[in-house]
Figure (cartoon, rainbow, N blue to C red):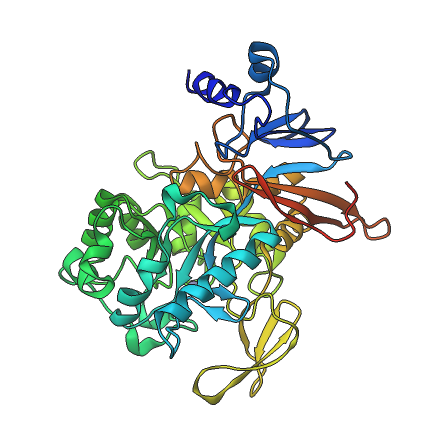
Length: 438
Ligand SMILES: [Zn+2]
């Protein structure tokens, strides 16, 4: 048994086992909150089998942490984050790639304090040279497993540039492309090396109705790169072809696609599919109170609860103080809380919400329980990415990426709020909120 090997390893130094036991806590397990202890190792960075350690090997933990009844969840995963803390993954700084890598590290070290322990750094549609420079800094950190680097990339999300020019949203229409020659066109855009295994790319959003898109999806699926349908004018039937070709997800459902029409349900219709030949796709939801009406979110969740993935789609002003900031082409953006608007016309310019606040909104808007809401930022994105054994759960053998949460309830409104109290990465504590009681 792998865990026995692990424990034997720990026993080689009985003074420092690297083992931490959390007690007096509620663990998120499936759709339940379970009152149970949790054992983790800072040596392996993984979740341990506590029963086996205690009774089989009689190893005492180095630390016992009483969490006073707080909730322990697997660390949160954001599969769509464009930037934060003043850094934009899609912009190569004037002083080059050293500055770029410093910017990525700054995001990682700050992001982890919000409970997001792993994520997909996301590039909006860009010219090929941007991908070819940036992607090598955004790939999975793999065997490095160093908690001091902060939040961990699971690979890049390329949102574009193979998108519909009619649904470009804030993406620059001038850089959008098609792939009539399939994967070779993708290779000339992202860089051939970036499509070879191990690829720095984990997810590509594209529009399935464009020329060559279906063959591109099939090739990407063969390479182990996940495909999501988005920024697309696809009909229901075109979207189904995308799923048949291998796409697994829909990028920010409802936004940048045809709305549901009763005679043409569009991409949203994939959530109602009953055909056994088409599995229902996962879908991203931006629960920031700006992009979607709460009822739209509830309808989507009811249609396919196991597919819902909360994403921030946040950009470089996330984590920055409120104020007015320079944007591209001489425009300026006003940031007030999570809301970002263009100074000249008041139009919505994006989101700067934190993922834990999306979870709070989702609970309050849909009536989802705490574990149901947390599933949409842990287990479900991990499963979509094929990482369900290492991320997104408190199962034995999974990475010990954890978030300790306090559930606060407002008595008058009955609204709930989740607050990040502690964050652990690879079995080590990397953040504790000021003033939180031990
Ligand atoms: Zn988008």
